[in-house]
Image 1 (spheres, one colour):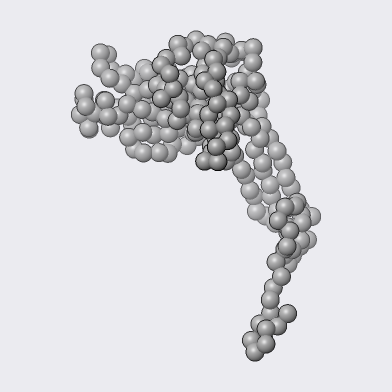
Image 2: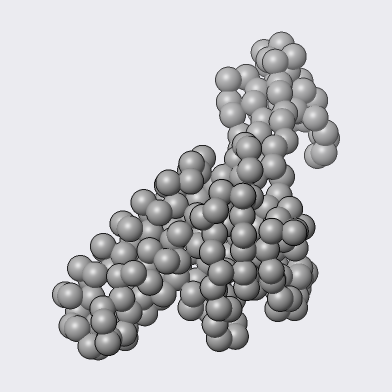
Length: 234
């Protein structure tokens, strides 16, 4: 349709909001790419861990020493997680409170994530100076579906929902605790001992999901070990 006096052409964009990748791509020139659209769903387990205690360590040992120790702790935490074959590992967050994130896919992904969580926790604990304050890890684990799609040479991968709830569990976990989502606990049932910590809010809309604190674990790999649950959630 032409607007009077402008000679401009109004380009019609696809009108549908929900549909397949092929339908979306069909609204653009070169729509033959729609025939190459692919969509795949896989199961993934996401581990989120933060390292707390910087202020206490800095108060006892000084700012510079606390920074040096924290760098060593973060490095050891990443190496502990990497030993269990995650698909991705990253470090983010505040320099004084680093967050280690890892995604596990494929065979025994949930078991490997739990093994990595306990190895990370123990690695952080091992860096605590004798008789003084140290760093502690607070860990959340969630399991769910990851969607991977591709079309016209572009790839899209979404793990946001799983990562978001793992992050919420990390925030609620106390020092040395590992919090599991109900989905992760169901996947590990029979191999872990947990206690419910009630429902944790998943987003600003008020939705909640039940979470569990790890009390004991005897995994097939032999890596996860018993550990007191510690204090209540922070």
